Length: 483
Image (cartoon, rainbow, N blue to C red; front, side, top):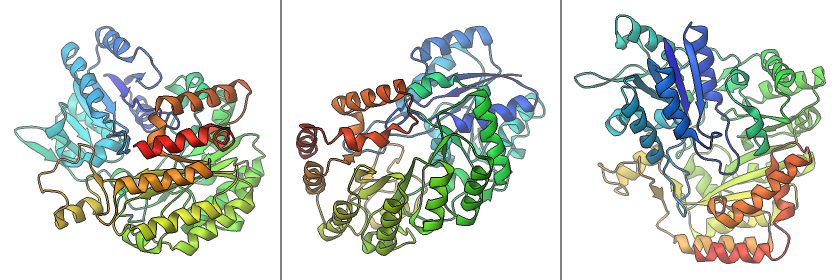
């Protein structure tokens, strides 16, 4: 069959995210013998026009849409991505009779009610490399949709099968066959690589287990590095990013991965998201530096024992401080993420987090990102707790951006407190700044100049230097206070 796959993501906040997940689906679908066409709405400035043309010329039998985000997770400048998705679906319905299949992280998070909310024929929850080709077989054949794991489908009623197999193996994404890399690289993107899937942790606000399950599935490190070497030869990206939900757990696997990169003497830079204090050690950070890591993202979310316990993070304030000391000694640039306003948050706990940032995350090798308010995502423990406590009504639709704020302090006080630190410590940003026109203009210039100079991304590494230039700290502090 002719299959059209659409990467619907339209968000370039912080960095553009290449479609690694949909590339896995495209590779599996082509391997199953189908003809595959791929549209990347993120990098195509004329995406809707080209979608229209493709629908009329290609005439697909089935259309798969990958949905990365429900919204931008920022309360002060909340942007829902569902409206754009609905426009895409409406255009498809107008010009095609193809079956529409939804998938991707956002669809897995929305869950079994997704077809009540979006005009599609099918939705696949969880990983789709096996389920999507199997669905195509059933569409083409006996239409026994009950045999497709993780499938929601329209019949006389909505139906959901068992979750997609959480133990399927992970190979190479094959993304080099599906996207145009040049535009991504010009905007500072890093080439995504998965070395494992699954997250065994139980953070109260996080929906990652809905996407990949709780069972960690590790790829052989030799296979991961084989993929990196192949992409280097074909694409030559300036940097690779490990996009595992938790890069450094289990630590033993990450150490073996770094050792294999060092053994092969790869001349390329690396970064990683999801570095967790639970798996931080001097040995690991030393190996990461030797392997070519120029940066990492660290996600403690708080530096207060009270809030860490409420979030069910699994580590303590002391481990957060220890990770900061290790990061400083490693010489690797790091971006730290904190969420203020969580359950149990008070002025005292906010001060504990701010004290940590002001005393430990200083200098140009640190960039700190704050969000204020916790996005309540469907299927999370936080969502269940909020309904049980009456913070949300049983009928509240969490597809609409909904945020939790501790009743023990006000949003305005938190923003004023963050603005005080921004005024004296410029390497701190608030998430709402990413969508502010002035801030975007600054970051766009930094990224453009870094690309022209041939520097390796991620380019947020250079923001601590730029944001110190007067009068930026004062202007940014005033902007935060006015929110």
